[in-house]
Image (cartoon, rainbow, N blue to C red; front, side, top):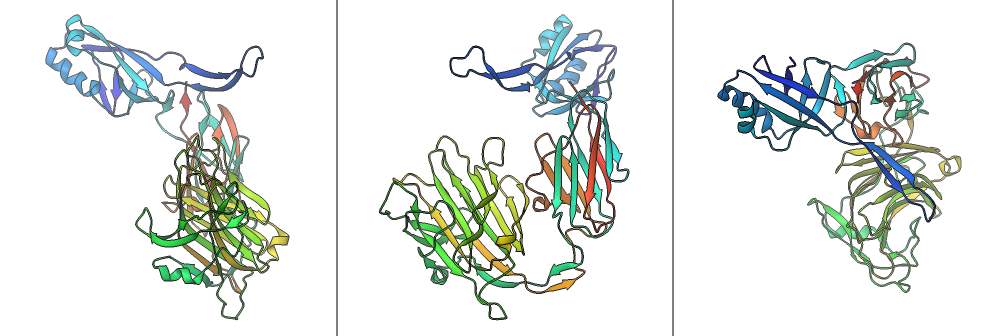
Length: 488
């Protein structure tokens, strides 16, 4: 006799016997593509489909009322719930009852079937397995039959600027591997700030005088206005694009603002932090470019970022970050960091030749950190910013683009023994799925500490070694890896 436990409740006894048919493996779905007139096809992708567990049951001497009381809560549940059977108590399935069940008829004939649809085709271990680091290595032993993502709990034993986790199947990074202990910048000076709460702020900008970095328009035309955006905060928005002399090329307005002088009377900045809150939201048939660039003292682009949408068949918006003429990070294509609705912050920090880009999309909790080193660009002095919104030639519809606020602060002077990215006893929790990585610092979700190139680390069946490293000046990290084994 097999007892069934569904959503934490045991069901089944000598009067109601369950006979589950779990099968050996879920169904595999293959997608193929024919190329030209060639023979055969090419395999595009392969995936495991949802799984159905058939649960047969036999009713013996149970009363009708007891039968209904036992099965009704199971049959009519709308939620995905855990399910396991006492012949394999360490394997848990997640799903819900599928299809219509005629309890009256099945009680009358004394037998029946319940179909349990598992949206996730795997059986999971009831409990997590944990593995601690020996030196700088964590060795995972996966006794399941299918690869599974690895999550982590890490504690810093001293000040630290970097945490790296690497295996042959993935990597996760936090902080900056080049961070130096004992040096940081003092309190910064604000060199530029606008929140666009009233139209008088427009007088601080000069319009259509400075070119952006990418997608240079044939003409800088049109105008801006300040008004409440979609989230009820004031923002800088295009009032009109006007008509450029060449409607077959990009055109639209630009807004330039120079830094205010610092306490030393200097009009430029060697090192700075730019913070901005923006929105980019598109429909399928809309195009456009949305760019914010830092200019150097020769009015040349130093660094910046832009959102763009060039495909009217989808709502996907792409994000690019650049230093000088080099795209240092980009998100495009179906397997990358694509957004249909961005509302969040994009920050840029320049410390000498080191550039850091930090992104946080509030609409889907995706974000991260990316570093880039450029000796030539590091020598440049920043002078101001230019914001440009472009429309495609021919007056094609353009997507929603808004700048809510922008803030630039200069780092001046240095002092010793300041706080690094992490301090002693800071705890980092990393929860991974097959596709996502979510970092928590001392209990709070903090996407901005993670390098944007991070991908989940997957433990294959058998043994997997994971290397864990911190800054060169830091004490060795204390780490624990967590997995839930799964079976086909």
